[in-house]
Amino acid sequence: MDYLCFDMVLAATDMKDLVKKVFIELFEVKEVTAFDISHSMGITDNMAKNALDALVARGVATKEGAAPRERYSVNQELLVCKSGQEKI
Image (cartoon, rainbow, N blue to C red):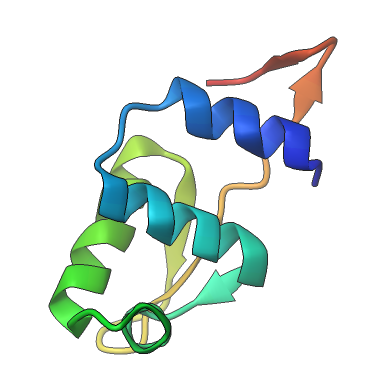
């Protein structure tokens, strides 16, 4: 995955600051749980889960598994640059 494609998607998607920070963290580590995000960012599990679910709702992340250990990852298909244009 290319950082340029990620930056284009990040810039083109309207998100709150916390959701953007979670998206950046998710991109860097590839797969996380809400607990992982809450621990690394110093926020509550509920805040992390809400931010991750917001990313899933926007289609930039995917969720697998069942509660309480859902695993989130970046939607790889979205972050494919074609001729300098990202798919949104």
